[in-house]
Image 1 (cartoon, helix red, strand yellow):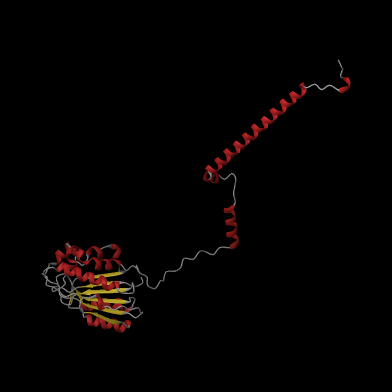
Image 2 (image 1 turned 180 degrees about the vertical axis):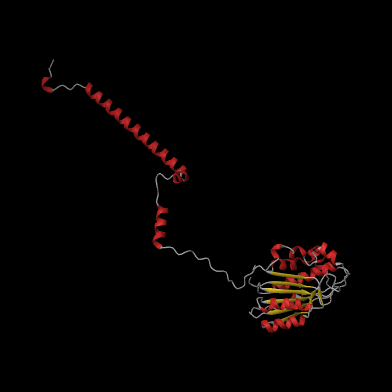
Length: 297
């Protein structure tokens, strides 16, 4: 299976380890493995302080319209709701810069204007540091950040991107027994309706950057055979049932025209014949006397 050119990585750190959290080293290696190929043109690293897994369950999907859209469209999507420790975003950023020879764009004030337009082919790392999520109006603030994501992505001149969304300072949540998480995964997993879909269970090349699909060539055929086949197609057979069925209306019209012409010619012939017979009868009734036999009275 070829690696994908669009990847959405979701990694969140929670302050409890109730349901076998991922090791920070394994998560970092996973991200590095996806980055090493440098198949994306843009790497968007988003840090959202105060975020919890509850903000990213399927019940809160209305707050993440654009993020969910990008996640669903991605060739590879990974959701990690619990890991031990904190992701070192500076390390990941520097790894991308060194491995992919990328340039950094920083967004500190939650404005898409901080992402300047560019048209060269050099890869970019867009580092977005968002403000803390408030307790009141939390959903509205998340929607604003989701809209910011859309505005930034619209300025990216390439469809090949990687999104890494995490929280280095996660919000406070209460520990939950592992049995409850297993019984109701939609309440504790990130976008469970997307990541549990069998269509997204494996790597599927939805966006083939390198256009490696083999061309579909026609089988080689002898030119004479092709000529004979085309000639047979062009032949018209009078007693071909399919031909008669296909052109039924045309044939019926021609038949009616022929019958009409035949009847008209027949009537014309009969009229001429009748006229000649009448003329002969009239000629027989005429008497023509010679001049030498005429008598004078």
